[in-house]
Image (cartoon, rainbow, N blue to C red; front, top):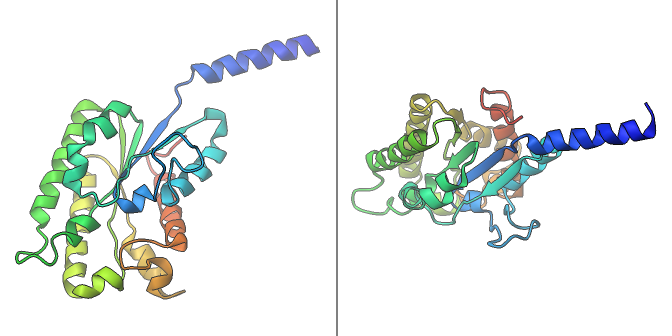
Length: 235
C-alpha cells in the first residue's frame, strides 16, 4: 500500500470512529462519588478524586479508541430524595448510556439519631421512584446500583448496632431493586470487611463512612470486576 492510499485509509478510519456514538457513563451519588470534584471544565478535577476518577482512568485508557465520556454528578451530603429532586437536570437530560448510583449513607446519617431512627421504607420508596422514572424516560440505559457500605469508626461509633442494621437494610433494598429494574448490583460491604484482614478499618474508611485513597481504590476495583464481567460492561 502506497503512502497516499494509507492516508486515505487513515482518514476513513477517523471518519468511522467519529460516526460511532461515544458512550457516556454517569456516576451519581453523595460525597463518596463527589470526591471534591471541580464544578468547571478543568479536566484535572472534573471527575473528583475518588473511585469515579479511578474507573474513568482505567476504562478511558483501555477503551481509548472509542473515546468514552465519563461524567460525575455526585453531590456531597445528598440522600436518595435529593437525587430524585435533581434527577432530570443531572441525569435524564444528560442522556447517558450507563448510570452508576451509590447512595444511602446520608439517609442513615441524617436520621440515625432521630427518635424513629432510619426508615428503610422511605429510602426504598424514593429509590424506586427514581429508577421507575429512569426506565420510563431512558428505557435503554444500563443501570449499576452500588451497595452502601460502612466500617467502625467516627460517625458509626455513635451506635454501631443501629448503623449496621440500617446499612444491612439499605443493602437488601438496593439488591432487590437491582433485580427488579434489571440493573447490575455491585456488592461492596464484603470487599471492605475482607480488606480489614489486611489493614485496620481506618486505613480503608477514615470516619466510618468516607473511603481513604486505598478505600476508593478498593471500591473502583470491585466496580470494574463486577461491571466488566456483566451484561452492562462498558465497551
